[in-house]
Length: 148
Image (cartoon, rainbow, N blue to C red; front, side):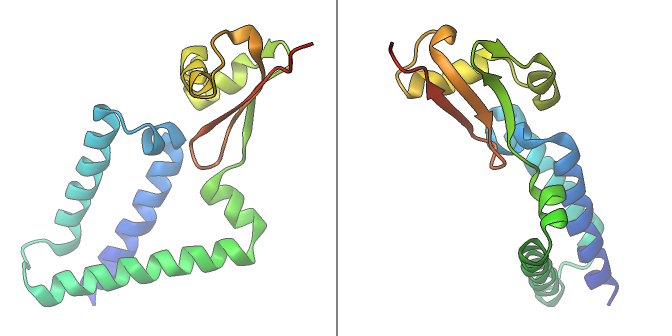
C-alpha cells in the first residue's frame, strides 16, 4: 500500500513541479530540458520503489501512475478551472506592432524564440509578425502580417 501512496504523491508532485517550471521545459526539448525531465523521473522513482525492485512493485507503480493520468484527464473534462491550472492558458506575446515584454518574460522566452517559430511559417522579420501566441501545448503560433 505504501508503494501506491508514494506513486500517487510522486505523480502529483511532478505534475506540480512541471507546471511551476513552465511550458518551455516540457516542450522545447533542448538537451538541458531533456536532462531535467529524466532526472526528475529517475529521482522520483527511487523514492517510490526504494529498495524493492520486484516486478509486482514496479507494476503497482505503473498502474497507479496510469490511473492518476486517467483521473487528471477526467478532472480536466469536468472542470474548466482545473484544466486552466493543469494546462495553463494561451499567452499573447505579440499583437500588432507591440511585443508584450511581460508575457515574454513570464514565459521565459525571447523574441528570437518566437522568430524561430515564425521562420517555420516563412516569416523572416519581426515586423512581419502580426500575432504570436504561446499555446497551452508549449508551441508558438505565429500569424504573419497580411501584405497591404
